[in-house]
Every structure is written in C-alpha cells, then in structure tokens.
Length: 312
Image (tube, rainbow, N blue to C red; front, side, top):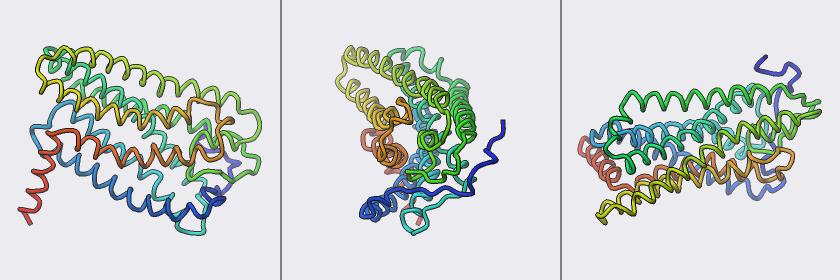
C-alpha cells in the first residue's frame, strides 16, 4: 500500500476559527505562552531525572519517557497552529499534513499505552513491594518502553496510511486547526464506513482497554493504601498516585470523546477544542502536576536550579 494518495490535493486549507475571528488572537496568545512553558517544563523534568541519582527508578524512567513524548506531541501541532492563527495564510501542504498526521498519532497512541504502563508500575510498587525491584528491573523497563513506542508507531502508521488513501473528490478544506484522522475521514467522499469502524475498533484497544487496566490498578492500589499503618506512607502513596490519575483523566477524557464515536457524528467545533486540550493543555500541565505533588521531584528541581545559578 502506498503511503500517500496520488490523487491528493497539493495543499489543505485549515479553517480553524475563521468563522470566529475574535477567537484567533486569544488562542494565538495562549499557545505562544503555553508552548514554551510545556517545552521548558518537560526539559527540566528530563534533566532532573538524568542528573539526580535518587530519581533513577522505574517510575521516573517512565516519567522521563512521558516528558519526551509530550515535547514531541505538542511540537507536532503547535508551530503549525501558531502559523495559521498568526497569519492570513491558512494552508498546509499535503506532505506537511501527512507528516503531522503520522507524528501526532504516534505520540497519541504511545501516550495511551505509556500511562497504562505507569499505572502498572505504581501497582507493583505499592501492592507487591517485595517483588517490585525483581520484576521492574532495568531490562524489563526498557522492554516495556520499547513495546509502547513500537505499538504507538504501528497504530499510527497503519491507521494514518489507510486514512490517506481515502478519496477526497477535490475537497481540500478541513474544518480544523490541524490534520487529524477523524476530521480527514469526515471530509472524505464515498464509502468510509469501514474506515470509521476500523478506527473505532483500534481505539477501543488504545483507549478503552488501557483506561480499564488503569482503573483496575488504582482500585487495587486504593485497597492496599488503606492497609498502610503509617500516615506518612499513606500520604506519600496518595500524592504519587493522585498526580498520575489527574494526568490520566486530563488525557483520556478528551481523547475518548473524539475517538470512540464515528467521525461522521463529531460536531463542528469539537475537534478544535479537544485537540487544544490533549495536544497543548495536557503536555503543559503534566510537568507542574508531577512536580507540585512530589517532594522528591521538587527537591531535585531545587538542587538543579541552585547548581545552575551557583555555576553562573
């Protein structure tokens, strides 16, 4: 199967908020502020975990993966959004659209699975503490991370390639801020029921199944935490797990509302606001959620900042 459709248009027009021009400047300013915040916050987390020996554990290894993923996730869409919102040119080349489609969905699919792996890690740490270091050794952590990334790539390449084969019948207008699968399927002409069904089935495995596993893991964790006699131990366990749960609901909520319904039934504005949420808001908030609710991370971040200013 060819990666691109030979009858494709040369470029797509991304309508964005052209029907609400008063929204363009506020959204542009928000993106201009949140994008550097997301990049700096996630870079800081990666540096802290690499430079602080106390944080060389499976939980922080996966959190480093999440920070790197969030940087790639937001970078795959925000520069294009800023360009479209800040200029009168609302177009993206077909090749640019295809590249964005692949990268955006690689990051999205990978994050779905990574959050499930992180919840499994917390389950083992709290419910099986005596076996934790034996099970979650360095080899297993690397294997899990590699599996998650490869699965995300497989999902994105297969689904995006199928979507790009759909006939467009001369249509080159997307009522969106970026190139995203549900909107491309909705824009295509001809029979697309099979594409909608395939996307829904695949997304059940990438969204619904991981979310169920996460909820089961945290039900077991909650049961185990209430058995901890030390109030300090309970507080630390709740602090770590609540951070992860907040990130899970911030990401899965909008993603489920977009991908677990047929693209043809998606409302006009839903894709724009949902993409802003899980592609921009969540990657920006993640570093703050994990640092503000974790004493170890806050302490390591403080040490990093002091060493930088002392060096200067």
